[in-house]
Length: 137
Image 1 (tube, rainbow, N blue to C red):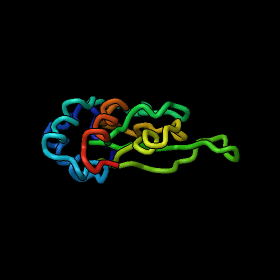
Image 2 (image 1 turned 90 degrees about the vertical axis):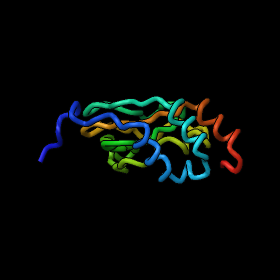
Image 3 (image 1 turned 135 degrees about the vertical axis):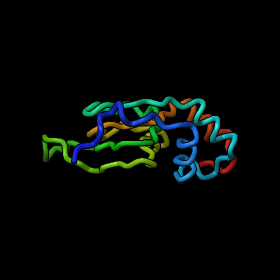
């Protein structure tokens, strides 16, 4: 059974985004006001079928929270010129936080197999959280 066309998937509301964020370990120590700030400063982005959220070699410039849809993560290796699937991400998963902590470029590529709604937090926004929230990693 094929999923409905992308335009039939409503964009997540602020309330739905809040509920998703509250379930992610990366944000467990945030207060309600800080959650509101994350939602207000994040960029809501929709990726159509086949569009890339990130590619191998991209700089670690953001954390992305998958709100709806899916992201298929693939990686090439010296042994395999064809990208190999390494993960299939579902709503409620954060992508890219490790690179922000380690400052390493992305080793994988992630694309929407059907569609994906993503909340993107830029590096400056994420770094502001880590500086201002007590007990943050």
